[in-house]
Length: 231
Image 1 (cartoon, rainbow, N blue to C red):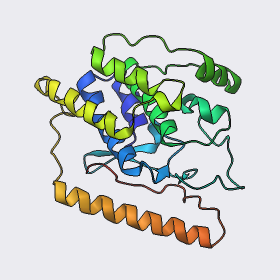
Image 2 (image 1 turned 135 degrees about the vertical axis):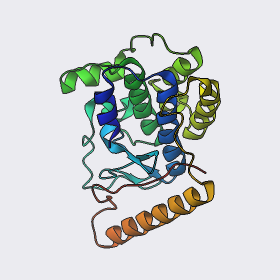
Image 3 (image 1 turned 180 degrees about the vertical axis):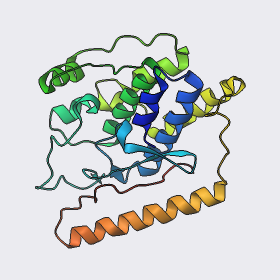
């Protein structure tokens, strides 16, 4: 299932412990991509549960981190509620844009609503560029601070995916006593997880290189699912 389905079925905010597990998986995926691929459209619909892990999916408008934006790339092919300020300014998106989207997802998971409500495209543009979200309530201060940092307007001021993973791991240990299905999930075998991630990443990169040679500008195929959690 998708993270969107989880959020809808929960009927409200996720418990901090459960949210930490989900966000840690997403951040691990971004850490594996960091410096290689920028997703550019991270949202709950594009996070899928696979073998007990929350994985990144749908790299339809992603690009190589060091590549110039292709001429046929639609700069505004983004989801308004999750787009970073630099995307609204039509600037070159880096992994910091994915971190910002993670911040929006984290806020939504912890509050039951997004930091900016729109509803129209121009409303979202103004809000992401100029407004601050309402402070998180009922959330551990360390977790709230991390989400706030992810939502900073300046890309360089946001934490890196690797930093987010480390901080969420520390928070996860603090929530272990809470129990619950999300925290009690079986831990995947580390060796198996590394092999799977390397296999999927290698296959996907090879596919994108082939698409570049075929003249599609390096755009990834829609519905390409990546399992990128772990080290």
